Length: 316
Image 1 (cartoon, helix red, strand yellow):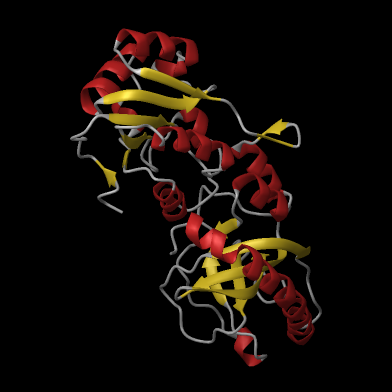
Image 2 (cartoon, rainbow, N blue to C red; image 1 turned 30 degrees about the horizontal axis):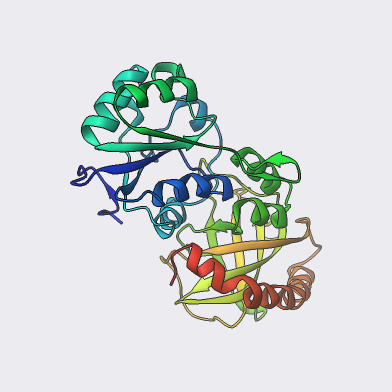
C-alpha cells in the first residue's frame, strides 16, 4: 500500500480525481471511474493524509477504516494516491493549488471532481473557478454530477446518519458495501467461552462513526473467507462497568486465537437494542438465540453479496 499511497511524482501525464472520498460511496466511485476512463492518462487521486483533513471535514466522524478506503480506490483502477498533509497546501490560493500541485507536481491533463468540490484558501473556489483555471493551464475539466438514490443525493452525511440509526441496509445501499469495523482484536474476559460462545473484542476507533448500540447480524472475513456472525456494539452493561464502547463478535465456525489481528467485521442488519440482563446465564441464552437467528440471515448475505464485496474491497 506504500507504493500506492505515494509521495513520489508521476512519470506519465495524469487524470486526477479530487476529493476526501470518505466512505468511497457510489457517488465517489463515479468520480474515480471518470478518472480511470481517461485514454492515454494515468489515473491518480489527490486527497489529504488521514491525519490531516480540512477543518470542515475533520469535524465529521469518519466512516470506514483507511485500509478499506484505499483498497476500494485501488480496485476502482486508480494507479496512485497523492495525499499530502492539509497543512502543506491550506494557504494556497486556488490558482496556486492548480499550478503548483496539479500542473507542476502531478502532470495533470484532466481534472475530475464532484460538482460541489471546493479548493483554495478557506475553500474559496469551486467548479466555476476550476473550469477557468483548467482552460488557462490546458487541462480538461470533468465535473461529475451527484448520484441520486430515493430522490436524494448519495453522500457521506446520509451514510453516517443511517449508521447512527442502525439502518445497515441503507448504509450498504448508499455505500455499496456494509458498515465495517476493522480494529485490532484485543483480549477480553473470555466469559463467552464458559457458555460455548467465544467472541472477539474490537475497540471502536476514535474519530469514527459508532453505530447505534445493539446487536447486529454480521459477517466476519477471516483467512480469505466470510463467516456468519453476530455482533454486539455497546458497553456490555450486564458484564462490564467500564462503559467503553466496543464491538464483541461471535464468529460462527471459527474458534481460534485471533488476538492482535485485524479482522473486518461487516454489520449487515440490526437485531435489537443492547440491554441489561439479570444474570450472565440469561445474557448468554439470549446471545445463543441471536446467533442462531443471525446465522441464517448472514449466510444468505454471504451467498448473495460475498463475492461482489470481496472484489470491491480488494480481498480477491
